[in-house]
Image 1: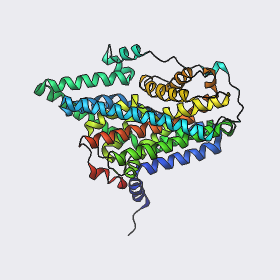
Image 2: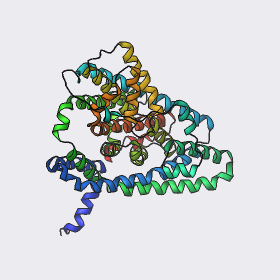
Image 3: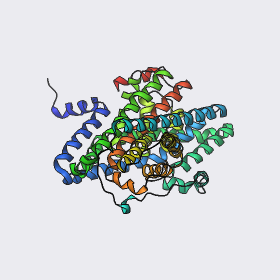
Image 4: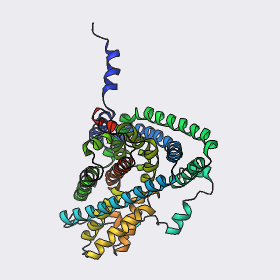
Length: 419
């Protein structure tokens, strides 16, 4: 006897993989936004609710998983080894990213033949902090204030210090670590509950974005958008997949399938930190990485790894040079790579990091900062792509570190096709 429709639909919905639901929301939101135009803003509250729910998770999830991750390592040498590998991999991939962006701009010449005017008033970028300010700002004067304001860098420093201290005091620290373990498990479960509304939130976000940007804004700059997106895809498919295959001896297709949930959320939200709860879930559930490694490497990556922004720097810097008729020398290209790689660490936690980093690079090679206004109108479109690459890079490095430390369950990793 056939079951009533009411009892069939929930089962069918649950059997659809989450990434397919989210992707459907993304596609449907794009179509609805394109058809409705600015009226699609009525769906924006759906996206706002989803983003608020994600932001609700960030601080408690990062703090608890970091403390548990550090406490689980026990061995200070292992902790230092993982930290060194993590930072080295992030710097290497960032340098590759800028080089790919530069090559793509040189090859496709997105700024040649384009005539656009720009307004100096709209080109202001926030001033980047000095190295001393960055270092001093890492240590929170008030940890509670850092937690309340969501200062991720300060939260990471405090969580690492607390995790190390709980480990050093031995048995006395065990009860506190168990409390954090239970809290971290509860936050992971809450993340899965929040992700249940992800398809609807992504639909609302993308419908609003697609409705807000008409063809009259995008068409004059469609070539630079295309170059950035192409460079981002090449970086993920060639650099990330290549490193996983060569260094990790892992199937890159499993990695790509396992991170789809995080990529779609990153693309729709344009926030690496906002995607962190989903990234942690993908790392542990889909890729088989231990909670200790994922809880340490991913928060660090969300603050210092900016491969997508590095690609954006390379493409847009050359685009602006072509637009205003400035010929860049080999020394200029080298300066873009070096400056962009180093700047990625210093400005990752600053609001508007993309424009700040780009302004640093432009100043080093003598390009007028006023030209930043040329890409201001499409920055959100570019931000969605570069954030996706940032998140993909965080998860790739976490996978490699997990494999190198023997904390990657390859049975789970190779089963991601079932997720």
